[in-house]
Image 1 (cartoon, rainbow, N blue to C red):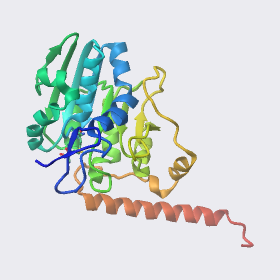
Image 2 (image 1 turned 180 degrees about the vertical axis):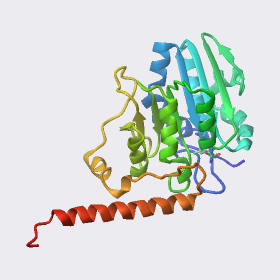
Image 3 (image 1 turned 135 degrees about the horizontal axis):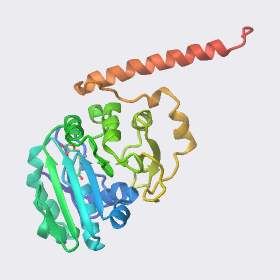
Image 4 (image 1 turned 90 degrees about the vertical axis):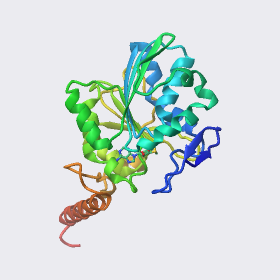
Length: 291
Ligand SMILES: C[S@@+](CC[C@H](N)C(=O)[O-])C[C@H]1O[C@@H](n2cnc3c(N)ncnc32)[C@H](O)[C@@H]1O
């Protein structure tokens, strides 16, 4: 495996097929902390409720989960953390010892074992890693736990244009069914309008999470309000709100969870054309006859 060093000293990989790095160059640890763990308020929630159930969607090298656990250990938090981690690449487990050798994971690295409940001081934790494709595994999780009340989802696939099948309205709807309706949330690095549009159509409210390195920030999609003030986000700026009313907000769709990339992109293009035609005909109807 070809590890690449990032600016905070933590290591990442370059994906052979897509050419994308697994993380922002500002740092794998930094990205996980600033884009996922901090804005999600996961540590505040664990402190308050002493329990946290997370879905780590596209677990990869595990940074998003590991940073959450390392920070919880560092802050000596009490309680139980359950993580359902999903990734379809079984080879990545071979990279985990190298990832965990990073200095900030020193304490976690001493006790961590996948699929096993481990206890460190007042904290017990388990990472159940599911080697399967994200949509199918989400269906399975929902079938196995019809009353699931997941606190948070960290959604971290490769980019929407490269893997639209992992950014669909249907996946976001599955999240909605799995999450706590009063304060569940999905965090992701993407700011794409199609992604925000998909979350909104699935019943989420959306906001922007803080900037990381050269990236303008990410998206939080949340249910209920933010009455516990767990989430750290700002309202979307006016230009993003305006773009959500255009064809750009049409989400990727895959009703049977089986389409490939090209079929999903084509379907969206057709829906965008239909949207533009309808908007155009509504506009023409509103014009005074003298024009
Ligand atoms: C950007 S990387 C994830 C980085 C990861 N969160 C981390 O902290 O290291 C994207 C991941 O998506 C996984 N992936 C690609 N297609 C998938 C699929 N259909 N279902 C689940 N995971 C998938 C890849 O194996 C890769 O690990």
